[in-house]
Length: 406
Image (tube, rainbow, N blue to C red):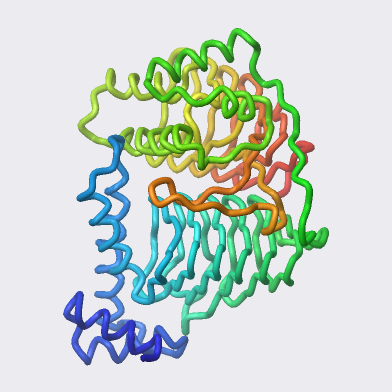
């Protein structure tokens, strides 16, 4: 059966769409002109929003129940009519229109992915999508985006409708992809420019980091034991020294899942201020007084980020790596501070898979330092290794040397 027929039958079977509605939806799925005021397409968007909300609500603080796993499995099948046999890992904050996004085996989609409503998107095998991905789309017939096999997009990348990202290409954090990118090339910037070819295989070098003192590391280690998520000595040392580690370590993998669940728990409207503070205490064993965190916050791993006094974090902020945030810092809505480093070469990444923990690739945490009193403007992106000493404007990309790109 052709993919178009599969998708239309999917809408008939699971959502009761009738032929009159499906005529317009078929045009949308084919990238053809469709009636602007189509009732069928409007209902498709409403149904898709509802299923996405159900999906996003399933990421809880407690260890995942079997019933939740079953629900996730059912919702994935609803969201992706052409779901492959090994879909990989998809996290919370997902926004898409059913039938507009096709994924392949071992696709990884991090938090906050917004695939828009009027773009046809194909994600190849082993594709990796970083946090807060988005689409720049247009009105009229839906254009297509292809993100080909083994491509890796960093955090907060925006891809313009009508573009292709070639096999094994890598796109740096905060980039805007406005034109096609060739295979096996590293691209950065706004708009993107290619800077070098991706090697077939590479030696993944760690960047030695001494972000925390011995006394601070001892506090973090004791904290993990206190919350009953003590990780191995080897994993601890590699994480906090900036060396390569793997999330397939079962205890470390469970700490990741626990961290992400706590972040989601912060959005519970029924939480008291004391309960919110308890979660902050778990996520940040090194923190000062008067910490405020907005909605849809994502922290990659508990303990790795420290906060001074009077730190304010807005909505839809993602933070990862060895990040030190000093007192009086304000982080605007939609900011990304992600000091996570992976190999460029797909072969060197050696993607692993664990049914309970999901996908894993070699990773090394890189430091980011935000100095006292700095304000990060809305939707700004801070690259790994950056040391931010002055305030950053809205929608800026700050490279590792501190250069601001608008």
